[in-house]
Image (cartoon, rainbow, N blue to C red; front, side):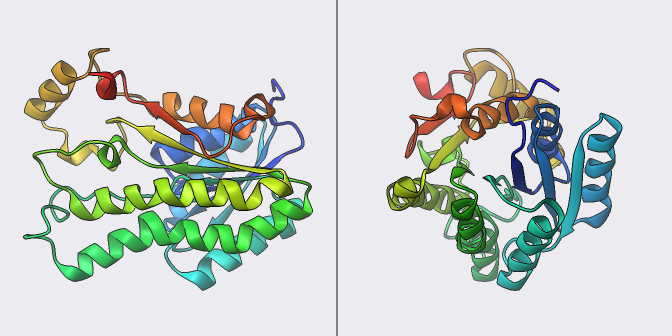
Length: 254
C-alpha cells in the first residue's frame, strides 16, 4: 500500500462496477478503508471481495442513492464499520442513451429518475455525509460531472446534461459553504469512458466516431478517472476547492 489515503475512510457511490469499482480498488491500494455503496448487492460484494483479495479493507452498503432513507442508512453503516468518514465520492450516475434523449422525446418519469440518481443523490450524500466529515476534522467531496455539461451535442441526452450541469453549480456552493470546516469539493468531468453501463451503446460505428473526435485517439479507461479522483481525495489537492477537472482525452480543447 502506497499510503496516499492512509487512515482515511472513503464512501463511494456506484462502486459496484466501472469507474466506482476502479476507485474503490485504487483508494484501498492507497490505504483507505472503503464503503462500497451500490444498488446491486452482488456487484457491491464482488467489489469488496476484490479489495480484500488485494489486501485492503472494504464493506458493502446496499441501497438506492436517490432515496433519502437508503443514503442515511448506508452512511451510518459505513461510520459504524470504520468509525469515521473523510471522503465522499459521488460517483453514481446513469446515462440511458435509448431513453434519455431530446426534451421532445423523453418521458417525464424518466427525466425525474435521471435527475434523482445523478443530481439529487449528491444532495442526500452531502446531507448525511458531511456532518461525519466535519467531525473527522475535514476531508474531500468529489462529484462526477461530464463533458456533456460543458458542450452541446447533436445526439441529445437532455436529462443527463441538465443533471450534470446542476452539479457544476452545486460544486461551487458546497466548496464555499464547507471551506471553513476544512472540507474541499471538486468536480471531475469525464469524457467517454469504457464502462459496463456504456458498453451496450458503444457500437463499432460509435466507437469509430468517438476515436476520431478525441485528440488522444481513444476512449478513456475507468482507472484513468479513478486516478483523478485519487488526487482530489488526497492531500495533494489540499489547495483546490470549487474546481473543475476535465479528463476527456483532449475533447474539450478542440
